[in-house]
Length: 444
Image 1 (cartoon, one colour):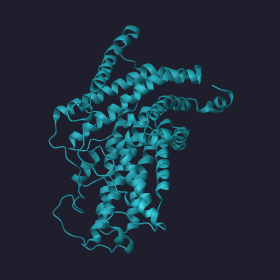
Image 2 (cartoon, one colour):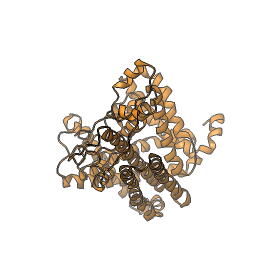
Image 3 (cartoon, one colour):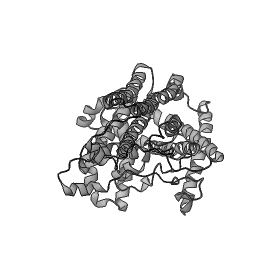
Image 4 (cartoon, one colour):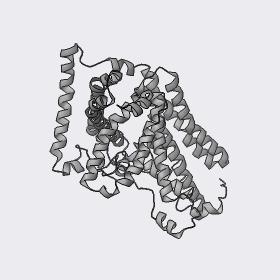
């Protein structure tokens, strides 16, 4: 098979996987020289109480974590009983009736997105056939944009509520991340392979041997957003581990529903009769418990469930974000899969492919993240209210002003104060968006 010749710039930088920008400053070159993509290694989830070698089980404070599980279990059992005594129903159903509307169509979007994502695999086969780069570029971006367009079409044209809209929108983002990472990573590997003279290899994970249906499907099913031909393996599947993580995921989902239906949804329905301050105070504790429940459900149970099934050995889906002393640490530690994607495919590509400086790349990456958050909310809520992007961009001056308390106890206290007050404030501003002028100029 004949392959096209790559230009001098590609040949010069293929070994690094990135094209080198024309930097005028030697100092700037030295500053970015240390930047490399992060490697996947075998690691255990921080709060995995089912693994004796986890950070949790090595810590003498594990009893506090166990206590939280007992409290959650107590709430899980007592709440339905109290609800039955008061209303004759074990669980509040009005919110459930909204959530199940068009449920089949909502769920079927996952296999539709999965099938569509195989266009990324098709692109790699086209690349090996020496199809013009321009055509491949068009197919890549049109196929990725289509997922966003299709998700918006479904949400905006069907009688869906926030849960359905959020589910479909998040799925479109996840598959976009995976398609983009698969395409760009293989593009860089192809440049290296051509630069080395297109050597033959018996390694099934070396390019182009990695371009196959099995490898692609493994990546799609693995709870990670950046592509590697091979990930560290966790060995044999522990089926008891899979079962427990599945049960925990469902239990946390039900508990999250109970928190919303019993403590948050009634406030939302009555928000116009409450002052801003009153509704914020009433929502504060339920929102904190809801966020902690969803965090545990997604990053500790759901991700580990799929990681075990796919033999994925790097279970660091988060680190100790609760010890953060500024929002930069929090953004880096609480959602590692998204952070890894932003770091590799936005931050590093801006520096090495487009010649951005480190500071400009950091700002652009943060802005991209803010826009992505705002997009998911705008589509899910069916309205453009740039509140989330405003709060995320406010973090930049806040981080600059709080540098002196970074790494201190006061910094951690300030971080938690911001989280506890910020969540209900943001939710209330979305609920009262049309009242913002009145709130700003006439008080709360």
